[in-house]
Length: 236
Image (cartoon, rainbow, N blue to C red; front, side, top):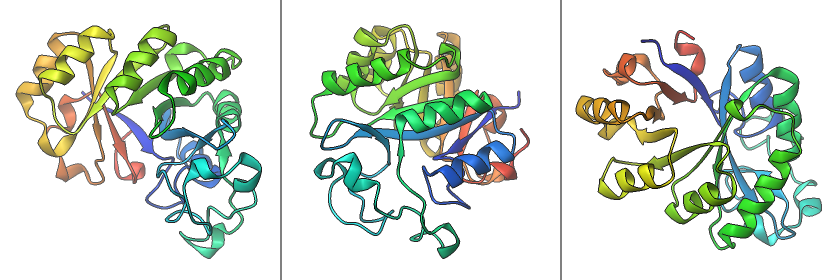
């Protein structure tokens, strides 16, 4: 089968990750899905940012959750990648949901909590998702954190859920069953054909990160989806 190609943080290979520019590029490429990262600010707003600090991807320094949303919105999240992207602002979850609704774009939201209360973050996420008209089958909620996944199962059980892990192991297997997961999102580097068959036979989709060249992953045609920084290198 031909796997679904999911733009990683938008199109992170050619545009500054998790920004409007990166997401617009995914739309221009005709992608049906992207993956982005969601985490809270100091004042509890949900923003789109991968790292728990802003040092790498902006002209600011420090933890995301040490800034209010208003403080983050004056920073430049594009110039670090290339000066042509200067002035790119941090996106809020609401910004993202609005873009996705307009363009019928599927969203894999990786929920990052770190030092925050998992339940509070998940409840805020649920509130914002419920206010969006995006169909539930166009949303996939995921996390590396088993605690976060259990909170998502409790509060966002109507949505598709995905457990993220570097490798498939017994704790992941148990969690997949416990939360009635839709998919298991795994690092392709450690993935064996037997793992794919086991998961799919048990009713789970297999999504793999982060595959940037077709020839780097011999099992490409076996899995349901891949995440890529360079989605244009693959057949959609």
